[in-house]
Amino acid sequence: MKALIQRVRRASVEVDDEAGRRTAGAIDSGLLALVGVEKGDDEKSADKLLHKLLHYRVFADAEGKMNENVQQADGGLLLVSQFTLAADTRKGLRPSFSSAAPPADGERLFHYLVAQARRHPLPVATGEFGADMQVALVNDGPVTFLLES
Image (cartoon, rainbow, N blue to C red; front, side):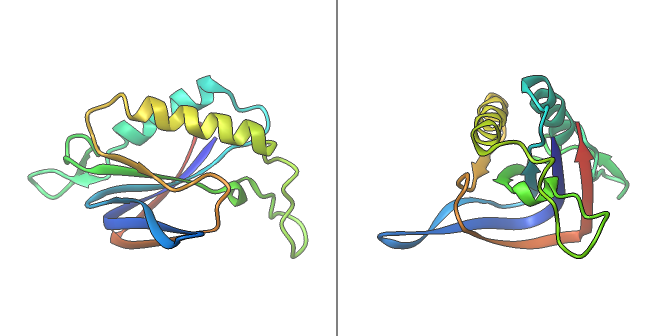
């Protein structure tokens, strides 16, 4: 599994449905994580990625050094599924998605990751798996990292 994480001052995800556009999830300061699931990923991969999401030290401590994790910084976690992270872009000018997990597996593991994240004492919000989403954020720093399990 992969997650492109961004330290944010705020972030939200909107989706369109029959009633119009609505906010599916939002956080104030914390991490926005765009999550991609690849073939061969399993619950162990999701657990390892969640550990990194919760413990990766990208927030400033009292001395201004990146030394605190999202939990220590009292931040939230916005998880958004994004299968395009599994793209192979090494050849040509069009991405190949042959390494992406099948949609059913991706959805199952994404929902597993969300459920496990919600067992921790921090705000957790999500987009909607498979939906056309509009993501808005204010990147803090900017600080962006690619995490892999």
